[in-house]
Amino acid sequence: MKRPFIAIAVLLSVSPTVRLSAQHFSVGPQIAFGDYKEVSPDLHYRGGGLALKATFSWKKLSAEGVASKLKYKPEGGAATTDFDASEVDVRVRYLIAGPVSGELGFINRKTDPEFEAQSVGAVVVGARIGYLLGPGVNLSLNGGVLAGSKFSGGGTVSPLGAIQLGLGMSVDALKGRLQLTGDYGFQRFSRETDDGSGPASAPIQQSVGRIGLSIAF
Amino acid sequence: MIRTSTWMVVFVALLASVASAQTIQNATLRRAQSAFDNLDYRQALTLGRAALRERLTGYERARAYELLGFTYSGMDSILKSVDAFKQVVLLEPERQLDPNRTSPKALSAFQVALTQVLVVRQLVVDSVTFVGGQGAVPIRYTVTQPARVVTRVLGGASPMRIDSTIATGQVNIRWPARTATGDPLPAGNYTIVVDAAVGQNSFSASQPIRIAHGVVDTVEHLTSLPGYSYLPETEVPPKSWKPMGLALVYTGAALAGTSALSSGDLGKVSLREGAVIGTGIIVAGFVMTLKKPAPQPARGNILYNQLLREQIARRNAEIAQENTRRRQQVALTVAPIRTGVAR
Image (tube, rainbow over all chains, first blue to last red; front, side, top):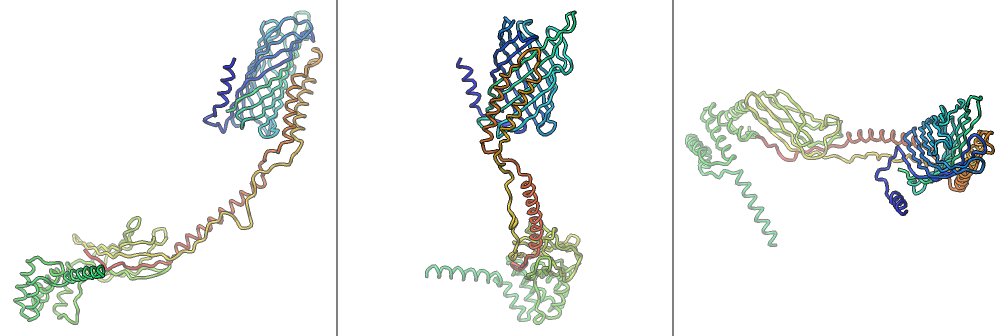
């Protein structure tokens, strides 16, 4: 149990030999907690887990990647079985004007057991606005559509039926070497299925909050 | 007292050695001179030739040939007299005969000898003081035969040619003592060298000189303009509730967006996750509101400082030009260090 803490302490105590002045890289773990609903209010899950977040920025270009794994448990209703949701969320941003960036990326969420909840894949197209609240404190708000969504159980989504919204914050500590991070992400898929008896609404909705630390280079 | 007497002995010894170098010590030559003084030309010739076969100093050898020249001219052997005087000129290029004490025949033979030997004589650099660019150093010399004569100055970074001409007789040069860039020659010791060449024969004469500079009253470069000072390029904005307001707006937008975009089919939306993160953001905004704001670049001051720096740079460029002009107009004093040495 002590090993991870020792490793983190050593990592934090090592001063980077070369400070990358034109580019910034950060990586760190996060604690994640989420809320998941599918089809109807009866299929309601809540859970928690871990995530790893990495960011990279160079001039006007920046990238962010999050890998998370949440263990969802039924929250009343008709759901009876737990499931794990492993999600990868990768986005590349380009600063367009002022604090506004355009972003492009993808999400891929797999569930285990496979048919307990929907596995999802989609392309993220959106925009992000950032603001420096104060020295070392960054705030961001992002939103966009989840285009070309695919589901393990089938179904379709209209072009604007899958959307995502996000809120983010990072606070520098230890002269910028350590960052406290907080992220919120909301996804909604207005999915429709058709089993031969006509279209049926089978929406999927997930809210995830993440709080963590990252080491900046 | 002992020390003073010791120095006196050394001084007398030095004087004696210098005097001996300029007097005739050789007994045969002294006897030849005595025979010439007694108008016994045959005896003077015999003893003079005998003296030349003995070990003589340079001065004595020149005196021996001079004695032969005078003796031959006294015996009307002009050609032999000229030959003897040629040897004198080669040994002592600066040698001059006193016209008041020398017979016309000997003078004539000496003049003919001068025209038959290539030497550069009487190289003189006059002492002079002038303002750089407004005067020149007079240099004059005499070359005994028509020859290509090159005058150079040595001692600086590289030899510098002053003059090049084909000349005979007395030559006068006016040298401005400036480099190719127009700057005055730096202060220091130099040597004026005159090289004469015709066919296989060549001759050089030199004259060391010292160049001294007067004081140049240059203007100091500016680091600031009087009455104008640099302004701080960053300024701390006044405290405001903007961070708190923005934190509320961002959080509100996210939560409101979540509520608005959530699916009605799924019942009440969960705002728990957004509220947790939003609370953190609002706390951060509140702390940032209370904290002293970070310094922001002051664009007006940056532009003002840039303008000030450009003005100072422009003024310094003018000062540099003015200083260059003043340095070129320094008072130059040129003086010969000692008499010329010919070889």
